[in-house]
Image (cartoon, chains in turn red, purple):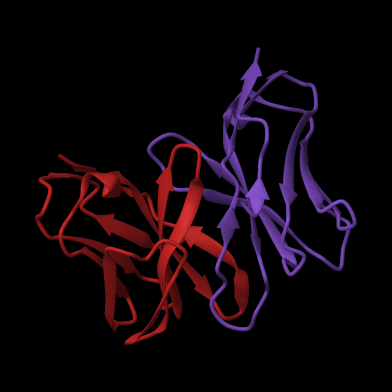
Length: 113
Length: 114
């Protein structure tokens, strides 16, 4: 299994509060991704990173920001959480030697009240 | 607009029989396709993939078929086992150099009955 951890695994927060989710990898892979999973939508890409300090937007990036100051860590921040951001968040990684295959972390379940 | 669609939300199959999961796509720029399996409270696990230059890829009990003209792919599992009960997602990418932005279908819940 790819060495990917996510923290926290579960979080309950209130509308309007900032939230940061962390993805940590031990594989030294260059590419990292954040997805959210919602019923009826499958997984949708929020942001991705192609190197330290190099990030770009995905399909559903509004309301989210990311940072990557080290190869191993990719942070997803909800500046002011809304109920529509209640979801399960997955981090994924991929390596240039096998670009197309992404390996996923265990997920963070976020509830915004 | 859903570029990747799995039109069957659920599928029930007898143990030992063949399971066939289907996926349709609309973007003709997609050139790489993957299937992921997901158990509750876990992340998706990569199962099998296929490049658009092929029409079939096989790995043990799992075979993926790609019909580019119909923009359709399917995953065959034979024989089906109880441990195959999970949600299956198909995904597609445009295969650019660099980060691969996967587009996922909605998922199909497969239940294998003893």
